[in-house]
Length: 95
Image (cartoon, rainbow, N blue to C red; front, side, top):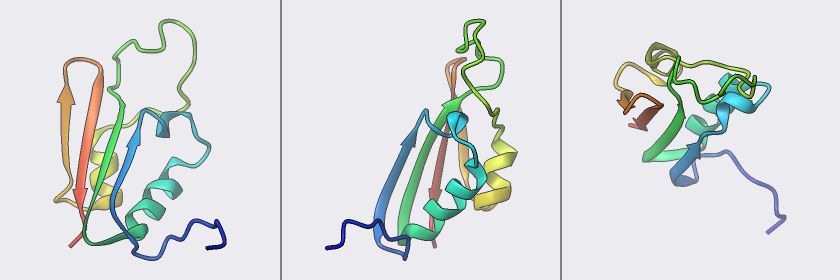
């Protein structure tokens, strides 16, 4: 094991929680996570819901995400739900 992370269809489950809003290239990360899944593998993502107020007046988040952003990148079968008034939960299953 070289200690390097591989993105070649190896993972059954990838969880990315409250991270994408802070990174420089979230779209690239989302596409790489999709690529890293095995057939039948699942991707579970949570991000702040737009207008949630989680920044509390301080600009902590670089990006805002809407369900259509994930459906465009991952596919129309991607499920997005709003949890309370604060989080968007995304579930994608690779076919």
